[in-house]
Length: 111
Image (spheres, rainbow, N blue to C red):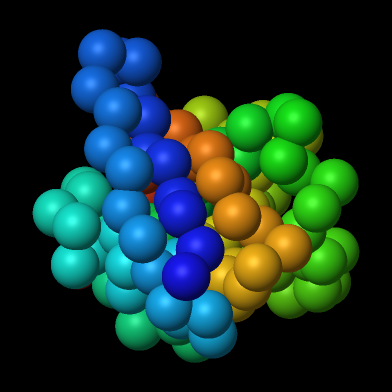
């Protein structure tokens, strides 16, 4: 199991969730009631699953693909540690991964 820590956009709420290895962060977030749309269902055609990874954890993630980087360029409130949660596969190396939910998002599909 991999523990993920979600921090609300306002920093007021913290939720810890255990996820099986191989899980996709977006799916774990949605199952835990986090406000991530994932409108394109992981196809990297939107940025509604954008999260901000804790700076201390960011280096533990595999690098983002060029397609992911392109979508992050369109994400609202993106930072240098932003990632698309649909592209993060959880494993033991990511135990205690901490992510913040952004304060806003843009749905590039217009839905």
